[in-house]
Length: 172
Length: 99
Image (cartoon, rainbow over all chains, first blue to last red; front, side, top):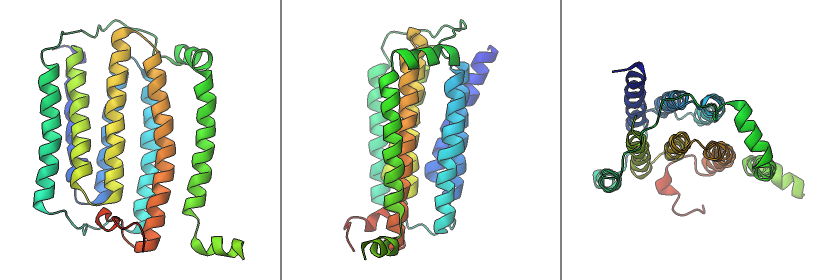
């Protein structure tokens, strides 16, 4: 077993077990921490596949910004108690059955497909220089449009999150 | 490493996300499971980008992250607003959408 395979299996087991921890833990704060661990495992997979830029962006944006936002909201609502009401057993069982059925169907469909090996030769398409060139030549229009998307999302979040009293004061 | 391993790994992550979305009642956990499904797709897309030696897929993953960040900002604002109205984040009492 090469180092690559050992790292691959370690990161795979870590990602899957932490993902199960997200949906099985009773405390929402524990779920957030498990999800952060899952994102770190996925970033490890990106590094193994020579996508260093995406690995760093994944850690900064997901584990750094988005999950902190989640944690902040959970703390704000004082939800870090284990008092979440559960769905009844039948609905939980139906959820597991439907998710597992999708898994089995796609697994059976893809099991006999032709095997393509990911060669371990070092490529430089995942480096910042190469991705930046592609982003600012071929994909420059979507990149600029995404800034408009961010602006509208920011305004939308502020407007939605505003308190009701403030809105009524403005109207008067 | 065969591409199938990455296919099955991201498939398993996606199905775990679906199970969590269907099983839990806390709106924030459901939201986190949606993020998990987005990340499973990202992982598969990076694997295909490595297989075909093409940078476009990685740019696409970058845009998925951008959209996910905007989505989280708006979605959490909606959840906070709902918590102010009904003092709960239970999705079972969201079926009325009013009062």
